[in-house]
Image (tube, rainbow, N blue to C red):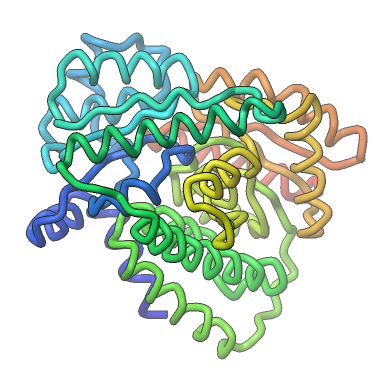
Length: 370
């Protein structure tokens, strides 16, 4: 499908993509977490662009961050110090883990990339006060954007942006459903590129291309793929080689609990309520990561439900090296899976792409056990 090529280009060439956007005169606001309110950034007339580590050697960032910070945080700082993020007109940091907050401090002190915003979103999401507080944080962020850009974000602007992002989420959800029903119809690395590419490229283009893909997928022959069905659970999955290794070993990914996956596109923003309140409600009620609390068993309940819905045979946890929040959650999630007789495996990964042979061997062994 020709549409997929554009998404792979955006993922593999983010600087070139950003350069073309800048040529149109549009400002680019980078963000590092799926809790960043992209709709508000877009409604302000800016382009929201998710920042990933480029995979370069970590040299300059060693002077600022400890080696036990994750490769995403260190890699983004490395790209900034090396001038590879000079296309940015601003950056947004939702508060999540300690490493991300320390990167936020470094960014704020240096003020290299223009507009800067810390979004201190509520951690406990189930209290009545969390809804009021979250809307107040978004309202303050809206005011900060308006002041910095010399513009006004109207309800109509925000409603249009919400509608656009809902289209993207709807199309990605439809493609994901095809993947659940007919796993061989789209490769895991291609699905990964669709989600990541939609976080990088012009959103109007992403919506149009994804709509075309939904039509194209319906016209493809149904493949006969007797593969083991797997769910991935973790944070950022920035390694398409992981999907290739799973498929080479006789497995297929039919679902995920990743912030570069279903956590980003699951659930829509209501278009029948005041836009800021609707936006706050979506970010409060969506599937959570370990940085947020929605109940003692909410993450396990969500993962077990995902396994049931996708009829998965097992779960792989791609654990970003030194990602403490996900490492802390893993034993509890593993226990809950074991209680249901569901096999799982943790894989420690980073963006250095080292030990791919060992990774492939472990995946092959796990799939043979299922």
